[in-house]
Length: 284
Image (cartoon, rainbow, N blue to C red; front, side):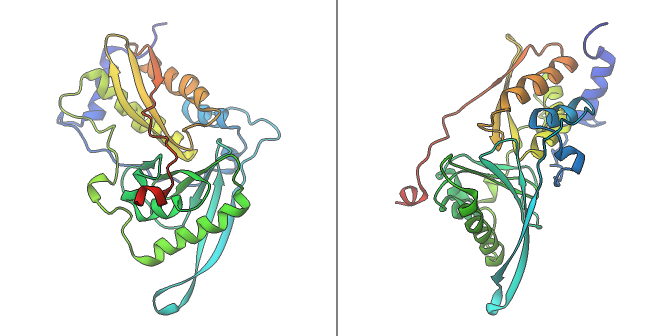
């Protein structure tokens, strides 16, 4: 049996990527929601592979239960209000997803791997102002926060709740500059080759939604036609996650190689942004 699609089927996939008239279509982010109960019962790697490759049996003793918090905050005029915030665990024990019950990103996602990058967002800046926070990520309806190994969620959660509630009660924009709001790395351009267009389409429609369910994202960083290597960058909870290598190889690489025979492998790219400069030092 030949691996992958035939040329006719590949052209159909490319048509879906570019649209009927052959022009590149805009990329629209899919809304995320807390995983289903069955989805929560799977371990991190099995949960991702189940979403990509089909259902699998959950392993006994594995769960990822969410917790909720209703906390008061002062609205305009000092009026007391309540905000419901739900938390969801991720495959990365150092990361938690926070669902404020309100939209976060209208389109795409945003990753803040260090305090310097958080200067573009009042909410990200406030979260980095909490001692022990090492990374912040925005999804469509959630915020993923990553902590240092020696920090405790018992102490961090109340401060994170307060920072999120203060932001939504302030009326401030999520970004100071709308031009840096979201990455459109999988948007298909007219000068993209057929292979690149198909890689972007698979990443956007088949792979990205599953990764975002775990509180992170992937960023397309390029394809080398000579080596057949696709370069990706892991974001949010997926960055530094113990199961990220399984996700990258057993999930993403296998799918891309199956549908696109020209792809020979996937490599994770690091760009040195994981510095740990505190917000107070960045502002000086």
